[in-house]
Image 1 (spheres, helix red, strand yellow):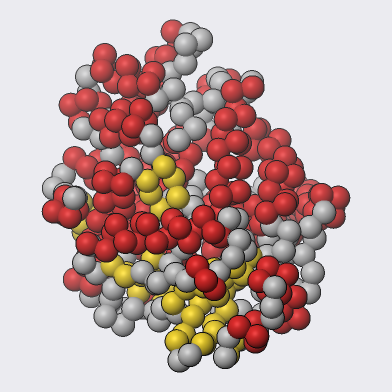
Image 2: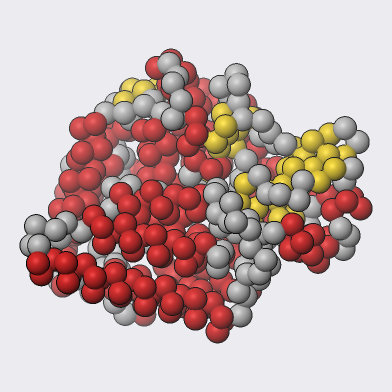
Length: 435
């Protein structure tokens, strides 16, 4: 893969890159509609393919929060055309890495020494490159390490990158008024946390130690003395990324076993720790030769306040969802129904969220749930399609829900997708034995 010798870090240079990408996308639309004028049967497949390629190619050299947004979107398999999902999923762990000279320069800037002055061996070529940093192998005193190095300028460009994305997101999600700022602030705060590697090491140690009671789950050890604000040193862990593993042949028993471990890991965090690994994409998990699940990235941790946790999980109980008065009260607590809503808006959004939550919480309504069930995923896709084309929804204020929904829903949707990839049948309450 071609390496990168320089990353645009200034606001002007990054904006110019994005404007160039927008120009290419505009040209793709012109080309598509010109062809469609002569062939009315032409589908959007070629347009989606061209746009996905040009947008990803524009973002991959910028790195940082712009690429992180693409990574997050790649997890929304039922919301995006497959061309975007396929291309944006590369942002999870396979983007053009920094060149060897830039790696050495960056390492010295962050650690005060070149890598060969600290380690006995250091591979200049990245073994894994993602949106915020890339990973290298190293050895010292016979021990093998994974060294995560943050891309230069990423932490400083978060606010300006999000300012460029904000107008697009506002139109896409129909956000109106000053109240929408809380969502952008939540994303900005989380991205800033993800660039603080001292915080990530602390989070990694705390959560991995708490979750060590769950069988089939492994974590690397982290080394503060070999880490810094922009570099993390941890044990090298052998295994295949979850996305690679699910492409191989494995037994139903193995898929169920790994899926159960994954489910227990997340439920334990939600219900015991009240904080959760909120970035469940396959690049953050490895499967070793003994089929243990290895969690390797704790940069994005979402703390769950009790005032959100309580009503959120109360609505996972069928009798609560189906009690109109109780349901409406919880929608208000979760900021889904707003004080300034009209009767029509209350009626519309109560119906929408009743339908959505009844489906989304259905795994909790059974003792065992099959995440490989095609009917379940068909219903999720159908619901997404139904409301994405709903003209009435576009007329209403889209500012719905507490800011905490952003990362909690993202976590559940990512978890469901991983379990679907494993075709896993899960014992929903098994995690309780470790509480």
